[in-house]
Image (tube, rainbow over all chains, first blue to last red; front, side, top):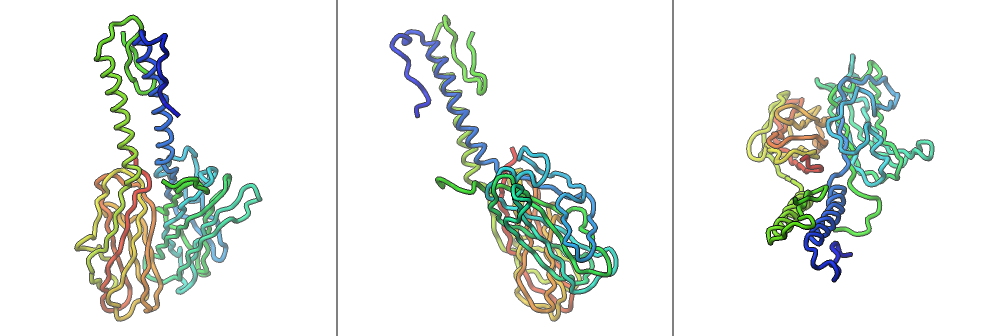
Length: 195
Length: 167
């Protein structure tokens, strides 16, 4: 489709009017392209970090997604809080990094596991996809650093949740302040044309 | 009195004004300038910063949390943005015994995230990955630690990829 229309025979003499029309038509065309470019390059991304520790009791597979007084480090999604970014639907890179430390006695070789899961809000939170990351306690000072991430294909109006479970029965596990969670939209669920 | 368009201020003469070649030139230059700006944005979007390298081999003493040194042990962030960073420990020579292995990623010498394994003296390659905002000039570096006996010769194979450019 042409951006600029040709001047009519009757208006050829009115140069000012032609230039005005050209300026406005050029602006409208370029604005449309700029919006499309910004939409394509500004991947909706949300990165947030906990400001306080999260205490998890043994063998409880607790949801920790919004605990720990999260502070937003970066957000260009237009949504104010985490999991809401899945309201867009699409392919997402979703992940977490954390440090898990026993609040008291450490039970060596016991399990620590992160679960990342997407759920469909339209079907009572039915799971869509799940990624796990499992390590076993080393009893070394400083606890267990863990990272977990995955690529998720989710429909519109889905949520993301993170759970943590451990078998350190002698004490709770503290997810230290500074855990980072992130969601970034890679693209649409279906791509008509790849460039 | 010339006017201009509401969004990009492309100039145009008003009805009744004397029209000179300057009016054509001004409009053409203004449109050209905006297109050049979009071309730059498009180029930067299609050529997001990415970098991959392996650090030099480092020899770690048991129980010493060591900041890796030597070639490719640091990366300077080229532009403000949100970056995905992956750091994989690569083993060259096992320690005599080892009960834990850890790698951590730092930004400006502050630990951002890491990964620890419980190998029970069975060596494995493992990695840490995460996404963090970073500013131009920030330095990414790595530190590693093992508990056990002897020394560990290792390197970190790392990747840094810009996902969002902040302008």
